[in-house]
Length: 295
Image 1 (cartoon, rainbow, N blue to C red):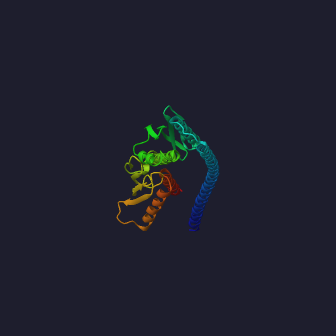
Image 2 (tube, rainbow, N blue to C red):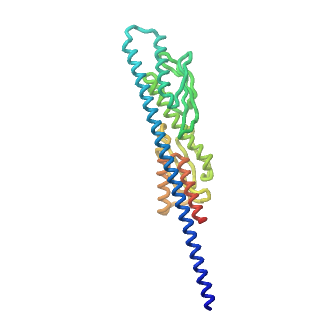
Image 3 (cartoon, rainbow, N blue to C red):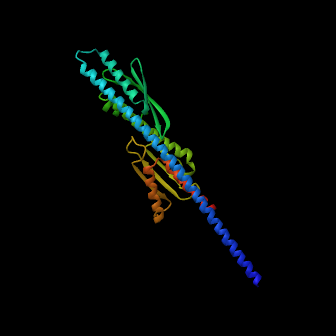
């Protein structure tokens, strides 16, 4: 009888030791995760600082070149006392466009002079990724006009031209860059969602040509049966983040408080982060959940 009790006691001690070992392993894993996260955060902070410094340098150079362009134009106009020919007007406009392109070469604008005027190339990018390029061939005459271009039909080129082309060609090019870069950024996010996070989608991603209206059904874990329906609207065509976000839950008329809280947190994520970053956060949460189950 004493021998049996002694055996039970030993079994209890061993079970307790095993639980302690599991707790130690979990603590060690959590510490390692924390250290890795701190290292990544430190590297990102350093990178952000370098990029901000580079941005400030580029802004300063652009401002300097803009000032030289304005000073040069003002000087020419001030010294002009005689009537000038139409050919001289064209040459002056060509030089002004050339100076603008030099000032904005870091922003994705480049170009070359042609027999008619100038051909401008607008290169788009998002998060450091070079995307599509577009060109617009301008005829330098009075009035300025567009000879040919590759701008997508859904970009409001005629509206932008009517506002700025004749009065402020610099603002015309800047505004066109804004629209094209925003469109390229939205398209890039939608493409990344379809290619990299297809496991989170339940059905196709629906989008229009401008990529300013996206609709899709998704889940926060690839194996989950709980589905959310998202509708993202980008009213401002010069932005890459939605202005209106609607998240609904499929399959249940009334949400429990925990699901409603999760739905609201998803809306905040879609408002503040690009699509692929939102689903990257979902994927990371899913990995943590899987690891806790294994432990």
